[in-house]
Length: 320
Image (cartoon, rainbow, N blue to C red):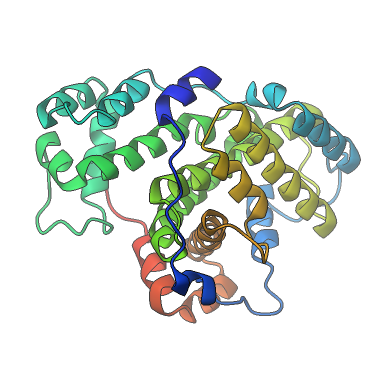
């Protein structure tokens, strides 16, 4: 697992310098209503209900998560690998000698990847003037940076979106939707924060890997019982999942700033990458909750303005 990720994403990228404007007036999502705990509401949507009877044992789950945080190699075994074509493509993208035709040939080796690229270029994010139906036109619109970030998302889908176990399988679509949107939002927020957009994409995708591990662990320990619903447990599990994500990012040899950003996101003294990740994470959670019909989330979203409102709008679901 570690070796393909090292090949997949290459050498660490030097972070972009932080512009003075980002230091004096960092961007950030507007504060939620006082009674609205975004992380807690998102957790409840994952947990699926408010039944307390027969819940999983809280302390056992938290103790096991703490153990896995000390052993990231064991945690990494709870997530699958990526399609073989993805590392090949990203190696080609790092070479200036690779032609657009060669890239198109490599992409067409994977039918699902072709569909994903076509879907991406016809999304609101790229605002194509006419529908694009062929891979050559799609690659021209995406460009190398766009294709690189798209491939990163495709690489992470089997890690996050396809899970075994009742609880992990039930939560997988929502976790993947939030992860993909977090990656997109963080990459869009990155320039204003002085961070590298591709590193922000990686951080946004990597942030939920620990949550997948936590859900799979809960499946193993709790069987058919529902996740505990207490506020304290929810926050403790999400915090443990974040630490797991950072540990696995280090194990998989991601750029050093990615693990640091996952740990620092939301803190006052955060790196530019952590600022972008925090903004992306909150906008993505807000988007998936709004799309699920949460009225409080919709009220908060309506108060967004400026860059946050623009990013939030680009996260709107689109037709394939």
